Length: 231
Image 1 (cartoon, helix red, strand yellow):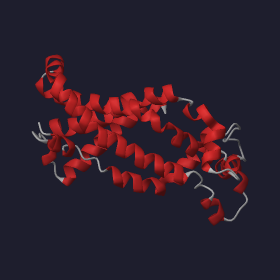
Image 2 (tube, rainbow, N blue to C red; image 1 turned 60 degrees about the vertical axis):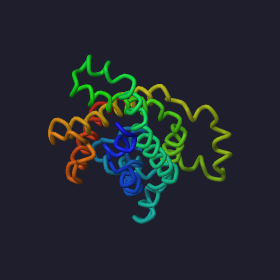
Image 3 (tube, rainbow, N blue to C red; image 1 turned 135 degrees about the horizontal axis):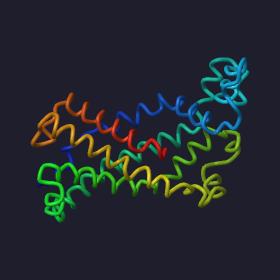
Image 4 (cartoon, helix red, strand yellow; image 1 turned 90 degrees about the horizontal axis):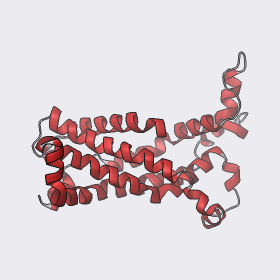
């Protein structure tokens, strides 16, 4: 199989996901702050007040627009992380897939059958790329730190922050790898399986926009389902 064919055979539209990340960043910030909140949220007569304090922190009493804007710290780190993550994962997966197809196709076919072997190659290549994604972990860590404690970043430039944090930016790398391995396996495997078993495509590159979209949805749902306990 030619490299050009392989690189176009699975197209989950990563640029779209990167652009929409900024739109959902406030909801991600709210979720991170709720997860890091040490007090109780649901208390009779105090639930809304506690929720307001947990989500908006020191802006809890500010005007609505100010409160909304307070949910955007770390958006630059988040955007950089997602753009690089998509470029790395979706750009690199076809090369790993091509390597596995060239040198290990017989092993996959003998283990899973000819049809299932193809899907497993897609999934395995995705899993390998997912583990390697930990090189981008510092950007995700900085995003979360900025979301949950924005005051800590005031008065410090990017290089100063990186220097101060040091190896702490890779804290949780093992858990990230443990999450990404099955998550990326399910992402690429689920998408490939949808095209193969549901749409009956011999060549994944022949998929229509609708088929590509549905395959991406299937892969995303499978990935979230598998990786959620480790998030």
